[in-house]
Length: 178
Image 1 (tube, rainbow, N blue to C red):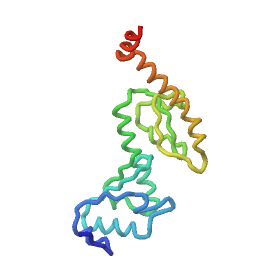
Image 2: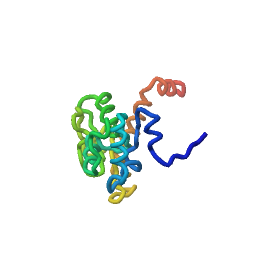
Image 3: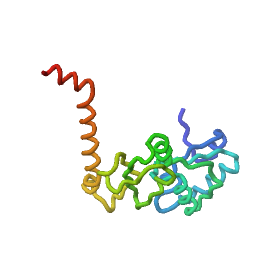
Image 4: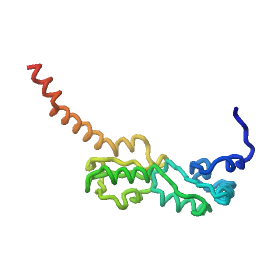
């Protein structure tokens, strides 16, 4: 049966760990919500494990710094896991050393690439991989993004067609048509 809660306390009593979304739950772009620090402090006082989760394209350390600027002390949670951190770890494990990566971020930072053995491509035409770690909806239109990414899309399409043309299935198709 669904129970309407008027306080966070029953949840704090019931669970040992909490995965809490960063944006929209603890804060918005302007700062932390008035209750956020007190709620996290109460969980810490009770010895609860808190993991903060975010779809931010920035690395975890950048999000930890932002949380601190907004008054949410590092001692109030165990870790921040972001999509940017997950992408960084995955790219580090899967891309060949020196792989050319075209990076788009909200503020021209290169932090997502720090510590990776990849080469930052100056344009999408020079890239084998495109990493979109953020966007600028106030400064760039969809047409602007299309123009930036079109060379990578054309290159990927041409590469895919070339691979298909050299595949055994394509060769069988050519020989049966002859």
